[in-house]
Image: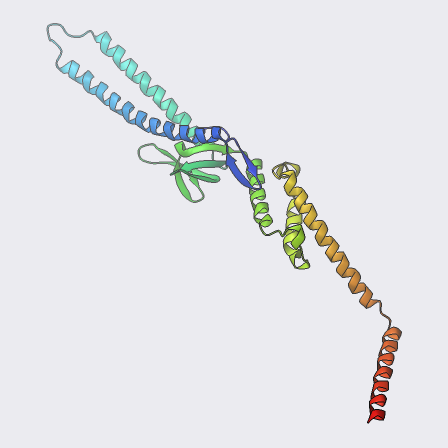
Length: 257
């Protein structure tokens, strides 16, 4: 089973390095080799038993084979079986240890991420893991991911989806309050490790947008306060002046008539 994938996350997008791509190809080749090896091993064991029985049946009665040879052959066969049994047990233990862990699976050239819910084997002893409600061969697992890393990448991906709706500084309006607030809250709730996945240019762009929005918001609040600060006396004075001006115009029109 492979180690951690090597790659980088830029704005929430995971990019595999060449080494990681080679690792995926290597695992596919290894998986095929393991399957072939299992078939070959079973075939050789069967052949061994057939040859042993045939040798005993068709040996020369006048010069029978030495019993010690049969004992040595059976001992070798038993030893091989024991080694294979240990290997199978270790493989089962390794698979069971994955329960509850986050893994990356390469299935049909598609990478799938998720937590292993349980492990089960089929009639042929092939082990499968349940991930996201689907069953996959353990040989298809290409990486076991640290939960902290996986959670950080998940948050960054969500954050990246928010950034797609963030306006540029020149186009910021008060109507963008919700998306800007969501972006600010998500970033502020990140721990230092998660923030390390966000590049500096992105952070600067976010800060510029937030600053512009705060300026617009402050300007609107000041304008609203100016309207509220107009006293009733001033309002009455303005109304009286407007009424007098209207009366003067009406009198002038009447005199002309």
